[in-house]
Length: 110
Image (cartoon, rainbow, N blue to C red; front, side, top):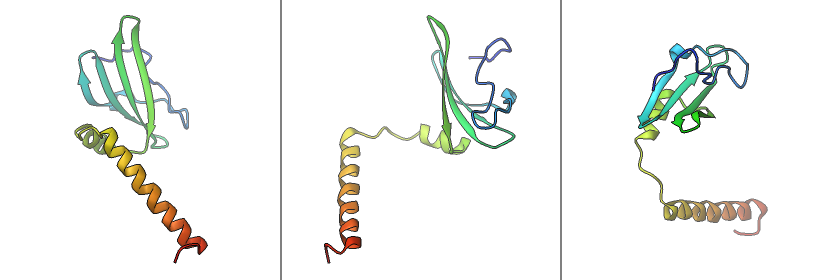
């Protein structure tokens, strides 16, 4: 997917309103009619990840503010999906450890 001057792809930083230099946008992934792009603000150094896709209604874009670097973003793209069972196990582990730590802090458990 090419970005032409006619497309109004994320033009300004959501934090400082500086105009993005889209020549510096990095393509993270492409699939069919969609492209994931990493853009960083030259002024405040904040970053966004944007998904730009062609649909029957035209170009659709969704942006996400991130603190990840371009390298982080590429690394996470290559990771396997987390299953619902793995997510539930992590939640239960965090809940258990948080409760135990709270009880220790409040003196209700020795």
